[in-house]
Image (cartoon, rainbow, N blue to C red; front, side, top):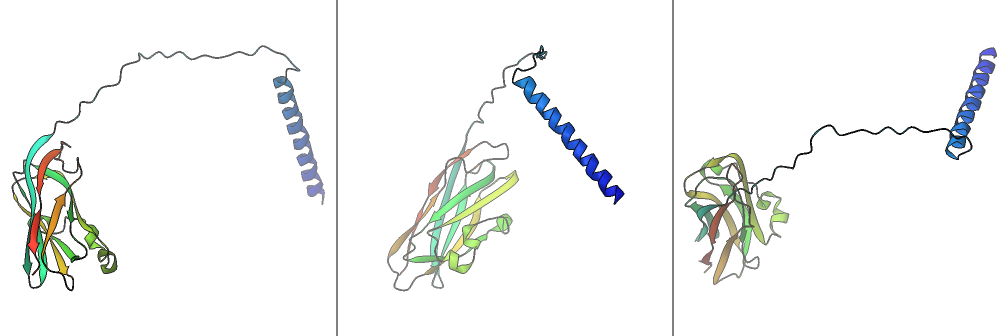
Length: 196
């Protein structure tokens, strides 16, 4: 009981002291008590230097990225390849198709790219069934050189689909770069395939 009274007294004293301090501070700021205020200024002793200008990396002329397509076992197999590759560390390609005639089933990297491609066609079957294009992203810290096939995309031919259809290979600017982040400029070739 005595400890409780002491604690309450201490708390009351602290409240009074804090209130008085706050009142004194506000009184000084309102101009009731005037005193000279000193302002401390800091001088910049370091020389100001202009920021470095970074020159953009020059573009590198590449060859051709293209798609070829064939019908095999009732499916369309599209193969994307590169020719005239000066060294490439990353690519981001889009394969467009007519979704009223074809439905993507799978995408598979070829050779060194077997487990290296990331694609929207690697989602669940119900999501893949709604796609209107198939993306393929590859990123590496170092260049791959030489020409050849990069990946294949397998499509189901939808019921009643016939005639010729086009598979378009495209990419946004800046999507193909080498290991030093130079953009590698390719031309892109599409392909047509007869469904039957």
